[in-house]
Length: 296
Image (cartoon, rainbow, N blue to C red; front, top):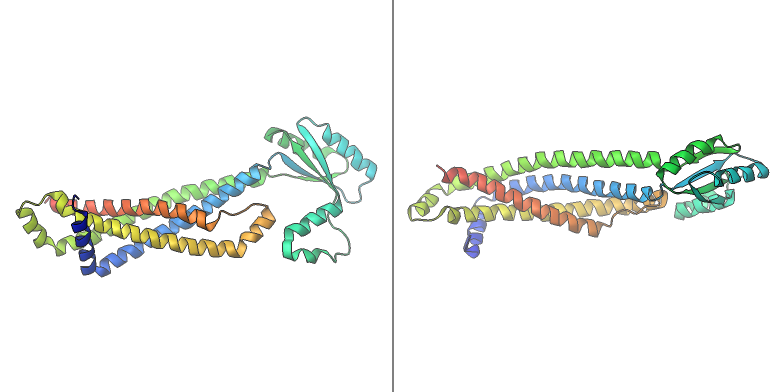
């Protein structure tokens, strides 16, 4: 390992003599990392959605019944404002709700302009102190005369948390399985290369070459395979993710009022992770295969 120039030259030389096997290894590891990359971007975005919605956990939307009388609406507002945990309340008229919906629809907002009547109810945007207050107010407000429904994000956050946990566990299981498979593939590739150079290695050992001198070119070969695979997988992940965000990213931002993680930022982190995984796979596979030969 003290002569990296020689070791790299030998690594590329043996890769050139066994192009088919190394090409297969690169494809297999690239496919493995691509799957991990897609799991990773899904996990990061789901966590972002959950964190963004959780920041609105202290906001409830209380909808009034259709054609509710002004006196009843005023009484409902007064009752909600005096509830424990309520910090303040904002009244949202039907027209204001429709304007907000048109803004969220963006270019498609014109579809709401020719409605025969405004279908949206009056509502209160209620700001509470904490999660416990949100749960209590959400239950109590339904008992108030004139209130039709209440919406807040508890169920959504719990579902996103479950989805995030599922993706996290799935990623770990899939990663462990695919990493083991990739190490086996690299080990078998290196093993076949070792068999092809068996006589040459035997002569080197006879002349006094150390085990590390023999190992080094194979380890560098594994590292190169891992780095090439990492670059290809990161590039494919970027292409797929950027295309998906281009198609549905604006819709998600408009409908859910959250943004997706930028492709450039995410891909940089994916590349770093892939390089670490790829190099580790290459080193482990190489050491396993050459160790068995040197121990004989």
